[in-house]
Amino acid sequence: MLMSSRHLLLIGSLALGALALGGCADDEEPDLQAALPSQPAVPADEVAESSDKPSHPVVKAGNYDSMYGPIKDEKFPVSGIKVATVDPNFLRKEVTYSTKEPVGTIVIDPPHHYLYLVEEDGKAMRYGVGVGREGFGWSGEATINFKREWPDWYPPKEMYERQPELKKKMAQLQSGLGMAGGPGNPIGARGMYLWQGNKDTLYRIHGTVEPWTIGKSVSSGCIRMINQDVIDLYQRVSVGARVVVLGSKQPAKVAGL
Image 1: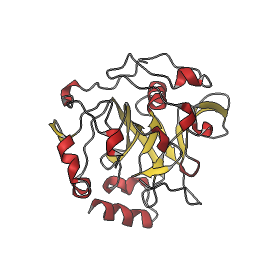
Image 2: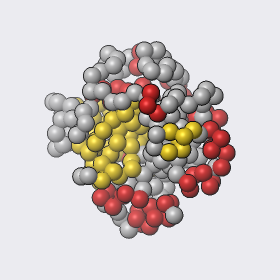
Image 3: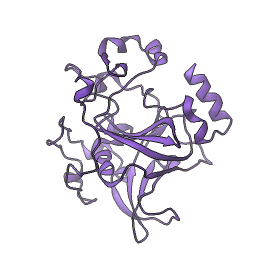
Image 4: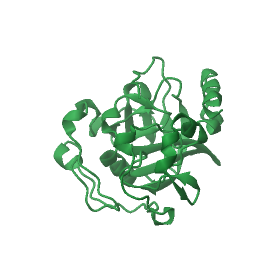
């Protein structure tokens, strides 16, 4: 089974190159009431493809009302979030950051639930993230092979076995049974797909419809971001960007689903 294979790989201190059996983009288990849409799924061929041209002005970090307010000029509207529901330590902020990684690299620190985008002059844009729950964490290096706006979601058969009611919310899409991109899709407004060489790791950096999970270890290995933050990051990084996921010498805080 998928979960058993992943678990065995992780116990063996896996390297990212061995993660083809893992991945969470197809194995997110959202709060059904929060995540499942009440409107018909959008056909797969209507879902927006990636673009390296910024679709929104990049908001300067620190102006939280603007940063996390509603976004109306998207394919689907993005609701504003109540900033008070998120630990202020996990709101977007430019920080001093010492690293040997070149500008444009994404560095993810799972134990502390941060994602850093390395900038010039010893700075980085820091975002709070949700990371893999116990048994689903990982570390290593990857590359953003491609990006998608409002990506589709394809749950694996193991998830259907655990949650058979999911099938009632799915539609037949281009790549199989799944949920088309949209405001209720648990993958959120953007997806950045992590590969190593010519192999898909099945891990993603993506948005979430559950902003209260930011700063917690709840996913099946993917890196979750507030939708406003993942849109901001998406505009700042290019296909081919290097991603470094740091290892952990201490257990991350685990929050139950």
